[in-house]
Length: 59
Image 1 (tube, rainbow, N blue to C red):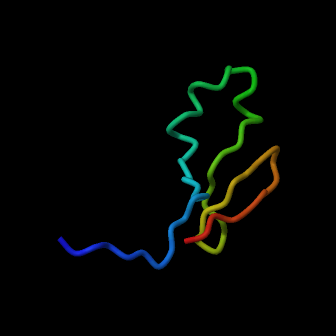
Image 2: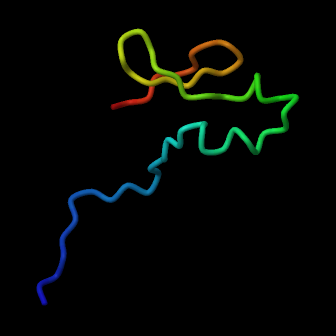
């Protein structure tokens, strides 16, 4: 078997999980303040935290 060669290995990748997958686990009294994934006016996705767009999700 031929040895594998790798050009780049990411040791710090992150996964963007839609807030719909876990928001039900946040206590009800805090849900309106919990971070959530939204669709922006330009058609992209972004995290909304405390009513402000915190960062856009790279596509």
